[in-house]
Image (cartoon, rainbow, N blue to C red; front, side, top):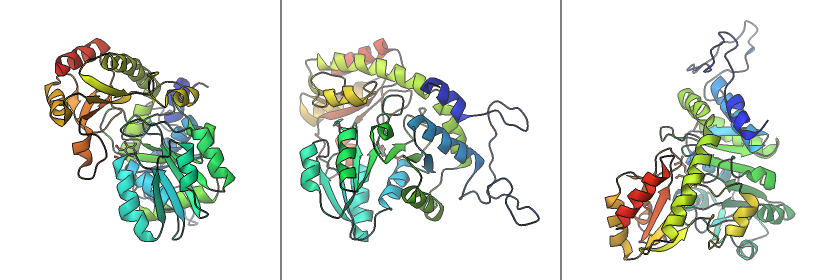
Length: 372
Ligand code: PLP
């Protein structure tokens, strides 16, 4: 089956007991044991498993072409579970530019455990090679990256890591499986903040890691899900299963709109630079063409006039909403540096845009009036 069909049929099956098409929402936090002490339905406690969570994990694993998904209560918790596979004395390489929370997590939670952390320009193969150590166990990449959409060649990164007996994990939050499938390119894990495209409606906070195969690493993730306890609620799993049925449709529409918005911005005199992998001028364009089916719906722009001008553009939008996050049906704009806070390397004149599914003409008119 193709991904549009899989998204519908993997996400939800009619309830066998009632025939209800929309799938049952099991809120139970505990499950009955049989008289012999066994658990005939396979579930014993809500933190350990839940029928809806299991369906969600399997559905996303199916779309990603992986063995199993492990769902968490946020993308951040999913990331932490992958880093939690590392032990004191291990070394991890992560992008010098990626979701700022990932960098904070590495510095504030992972390094204090005795794990060595190197941030490198992982979108450049030479930088990965230079950062490599004999104790490197994990290469973490994020592609396209937040917020300047650096493109990392997933297949090359996988080959490099595997030749040195390390694992490759890819944060593919900006590129859901409709447009990019890191496991097929050799990654061992793909991670998503399901808060974004999988939810698609800005009403769920969640995360998932899909493992390419069963084995120790997957067991380690399950262990952290159970003992770390950062699990998604049954209702959030239900909402995600409902939303992901329209994931392919939404993302196609978002990519269509994004291509038009990027072309418009690239030609606008107030715009200094556009970061969008679909533009031939983007340094990662060739990599994007090789490993992405479409170029996604995230982009950033630097505007002439510095921070004041950027804030003024954001202040004038009427169709775009000023907010952080991404992947929802509504278009968002944000002044990324002030969101990331002190120490940010993001330019002060940069605005990040998440393109939704509104009519593209309305988005272009809004940006035209906001840019002035
Ligand atoms: N990874 C990326 C690329 C993100 O953009 C985000 C959030 O913006 C996260 C991870 C963290 O996800 P969450 O906010 O669901 O914890």
